[in-house]
Amino acid sequence: MNKYGQMALEHWQATAPSRVAELSDPATFFETLGLEMQAQVTNLASMLAGSDRQGETFLQKVARLTAARRQAEEVVMSQLAWVTDPSLPLDQAREEWEQTRPSDENLVLWAERMQDCPDSMPSSVELEEMAKTWALPVEFLLELVATEPPREYMRANRATLAEAATIRFFRELR
Image 1 (spheres, rainbow, N blue to C red):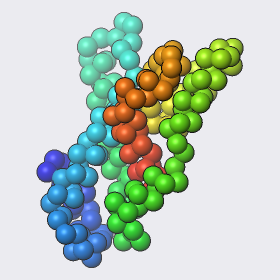
Image 2 (image 1 turned 60 degrees about the vertical axis):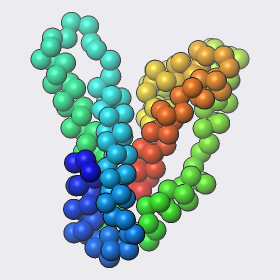
Image 3 (image 1 turned 90 degrees about the horizontal axis):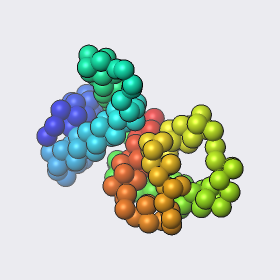
């Protein structure tokens, strides 16, 4: 179990011990949760850090990457705050969320509209907000619009979409 899984286990034991006791296999549950959290931290840290900056020194880059990682860890770990005795176990809450969340098909439709009318491409601020909402890098959205057909880009990047969905799920649990 990685450090995130261990931290989650300790948090649950302190705030929702009855929920931990109900788990059929707590070790596997928290190992899986820890891996999901690690993926979220990695993805969010990458988004927060952004790309290398022109003229950036080695130490500045290390500071930028370290700050982004710490901030990502804080965001992802804060997602555990909801565990005070949730009404649904995490897997059931995720299943319910999957049934009601906006479809990734909306991104395909958006990209197709942008391809049909490039003049309607959102500003960089709007694009960054959309990336934040969907928990995807801006570069992902730009590549989605640049690829014909966009659906192929979505298929080729299922793992990125799955990580983004997990981030949005935990974000909404708060």
